[in-house]
Amino acid sequence: MKIAIVDGYSTGSLLVKKLRQRGVECLHVRSQEVPPARLLPSFVPEDYAADLGWFPDPADAVRALKEAGVDRVVAGTECGVVLADTLAHELGLPGNEFDGVEARRDKYAMAERLAAAGLAAPVGFSTTEPAAAVAWFHAAGGGTAVVKPAASAGTDNVHVCTTAEQVRAACTAVMTSNDYFGNPNPSAVIQKFLVGTEYIVNTVAVDGVQKVSDVWISAKTPGPTGAPLYDHQQPLPVTAPHVAGLVDYVTRAVTALGITNGAAHSEVMLTADGPVLIETGARLMGAMLPDVIERHSGTSHVELLALALTDPSAFHAFRDREVRWNGYVRNIWLINRTAGPATAWHDRFAALPAFDRLVTGVRAGDPVRRTVDMASSPGYVSLTAGTEAALDRDQAAIRAMEAAGLYVDEANVDEAYADEANAGGACADGERAGGERVGGA
Image (cartoon, rainbow, N blue to C red; front, top):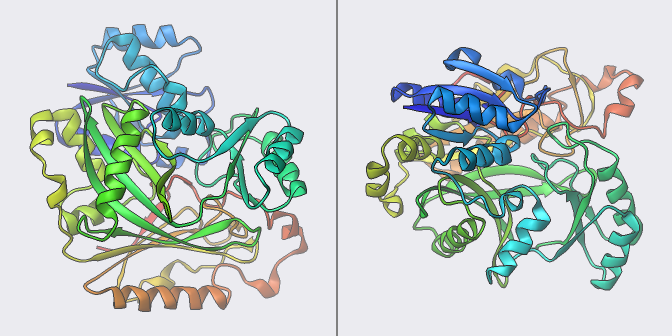
């Protein structure tokens, strides 16, 4: 079996390793002439039989993959979603519905497609003019709104606004910058702020049959710019309250988005009126350590996709609602409050009883920025334990270390770092599969 991976970065690099273990020959295709520098550390060229590179004309990519005799085309990460679906469609291979492919990247089009299917969706507006966003904000009654790029990732350039001037400034900031993958942002999306508890639901589909690999709760904390920061994420058992309703809504949502063959990573807000999709990526979840998840639940998003690609009958036999966890897992997002050169902090977490793994792209001496979003976090720590109390204890210890100035020697910060404080991007991979993994079982 041969599978082409488009943009095999982030968790896509972990998928390739699992596919190789199953005897699959993998080829690599890039969606961009110059790949995102922040994602390259997670790319492992030797895992591929061939790296075909970037094709200025997608028709040439179609011919190359046809000559290679590939059986499937899969997105390795978010920036590869549209090209992967396009190539699968042109090659006549199993894949997602091609109609509406752009709605799997454009957040406004995504919400519109959900609404058209009769599903709860964010109320919003897309524009290339900040003044038009301000007009929409007034017409919508003001309140709190979120402004963000139409097709980025990693909480990049997300702004929470409560005034018209904040909306104008946020739209200007979005449209004068590149997205997480280095592409220009020609437009901005403004949406009503969703109030509730945020969850993650990861699914895999084969011929329209959706199965769930894992469900997570995402806890957030106020950030220095007003936008919330991820505090921690923790998987939930399928028997937990609200999970059945979330899963039902998300499986209908991803189906409405045409994700009928492959992985989907959905962020959903459980509001007072029920679940509302924040966004879905037609790819694997980042911020994932599949071996940790599999050790405690028997499967993972990566494992389930590999199963779907190589053994559809086993996928159909998989009983997703019977997955049980044999311990507690929590990913703690690291939060740095002062920009400066990184100290040698990496070994500080190893003594924590629940410590399992540190994922970071920051080394001692590297510039580390103030954490304003996921991409500017120094990384995350995976904790595993037999009780939630043990996770709470070690998370509190991590926050205490940070409060004492863990990542930067604040007494010796050069003034040259002052302008760095609000910039993002210290960690190697905002989708969070990459970065150096330090320590652990």
